[in-house]
Image 1 (cartoon, rainbow, N blue to C red):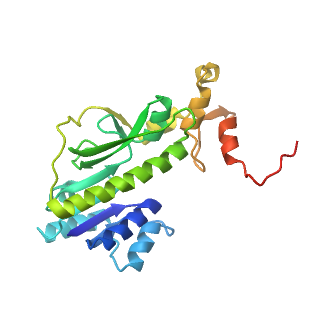
Image 2: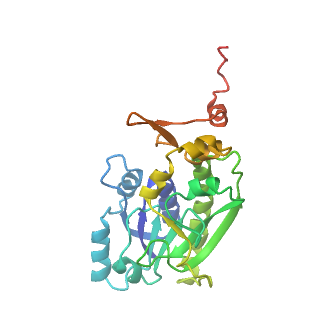
Image 3: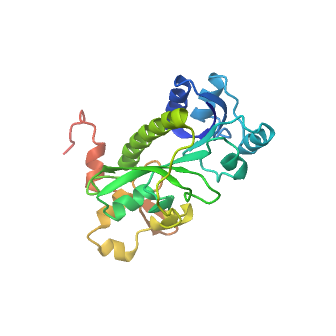
Length: 257
């Protein structure tokens, strides 16, 4: 099976390595290669895989009809266009770190905590020309505790589940080709943009009076990024609560007081 792999972050490197170990031929990798410290670009080059832009990948598919079996997107940040959606024999599959059709776009981890959801999940779906609306292949749900979770801890758990889903789906595609999809209307649900997510971080006067202030603080705790913040004199100050501080304690540290 020949694949175009689109991905980024350290999880992407692990999955790219695993994909090669399954005997899949990765024809090229599209990633955040504009950054010198891109782990995915570095691993691809070390493995002898060409690193290309999305535009170059589109051109390749158009010039080599029928030669690419599958395109995959794992935490890839760009909107994927028609050549990579329609060109591969088995389509283009995205791995989304949230529950579809309910939660599209950004802020999934934050929403899961803010909404006090009893479960979270990961989704594999075929890509279409709008974000996170393609036909759903599989949704895997799992338990988490919103009362103790932070965006950071939920991201770690979610990525473990998403990597497992990736491996399962890739092996199924390798065996069966194009996969069946669920009878679910994926046009519905809530889409949250990055701008909206950042606006959600601001702590209002209402938040300060709420019993759920700690929930909002944990929902956006993901250092080194800005968390839930108050603004004073044009400066932002991220808030932290004792639960988070306790989780950061070095067990070998002796209390000063």
